[in-house]
Image 1 (spheres, helix red, strand yellow):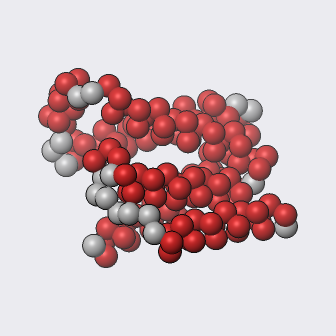
Image 2: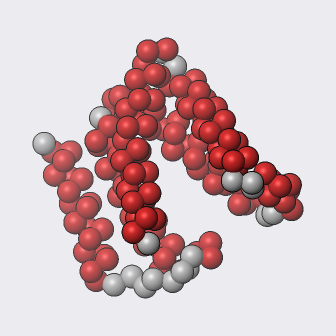
Length: 145
């Protein structure tokens, strides 16, 4: 569990770095969407190497038999990458990531509460709600600064 938390913490650290780097690339080449394509292409190569290295390549043959709506994950990933690359230079990396984080917390709370997409049910309570509202209040304070 501690290892998993560490991996996710590292992934969280990587998100604003990804936003800053890709925003910089988009600015330098004058095309944020093209920078998103470059990032997704590099990500695809890394993912293919990881699938091959872990012996999971055969599992790719099973994808065509899965419900199409599960592929929405790829659409959402592209939306995130393209939107953060386009918005971050104007809005600020910190502001953009804070909004993303707030959206993640709200969506995660709803997914957990209702057990959507096969998630383990974790009911909404006042403490969780207070945390989300505190983050929303923080966003307002950051925007006014």
